[in-house]
Image (cartoon, rainbow, N blue to C red):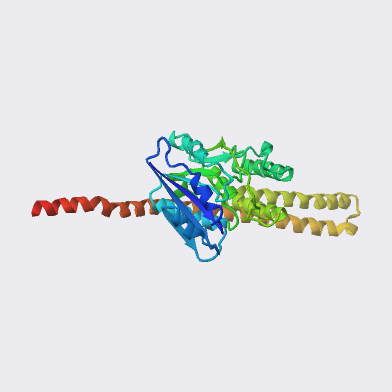
Length: 332
């Protein structure tokens, strides 16, 4: 059983050594632990520091492509390295390295596909009151959208089984955390939360420059992920709501028409008719989007199958080489 710990980095040369030193080198049930650093276009010597500290794998982006892209690159590299379990952690030392054993345990026991480290946002002494409330609100929204119970939806400290990593396709450009959970919930993957410890961070997050911007980007990510995997419910529901609003002025016009005063209220009929047509069009868009979503599911299933075939083909030469050497010795 191989565990790959991936660490997305952006100008983390100063903090990375302490984070690497805190990572576990041995976990019960894990045969091999390897470390993967994703250098997302750093302008310092993050990659060199990673190699100096004996990191097994280093992936570099020539320019800064964002956390979601770094996460995707890490997942691809970890799968190529033969990871059975992938753990994602931050380079700023926010998460306690020893707790990696806690979040991989449910996967080792076969109880979960994805495990999210719960920082206890509501009572975490390292978070301010505004951040606590926003984190709690965001987690409740994600729970409702994904139909899963995750008390800390934006926690980046999480463990992923190989099968789950092959099935998740991050499409957002901002942060993978909520997108990943909504996908996993709709794909019926087993998700658990495990309480973990945190350390105080001495610098602001590099993911976002302000809380309002973080809220907007996270909201867009959640809306996009939800409509991608639930288009029929999202668009048909919206279309019915618009159509219902359109019915109100039409009924108003009919009441005046019955009373013989319809000539002065034709505008209600026009507005109501326009809203009714718009509602029907939005609902039809939902049906079309649902058909596209069905096609996307087939493509994703083919992608998982393709990844599995690639793994078998890459493993085949390694398995065949000893047999070839044995035949050569026999011939000699």
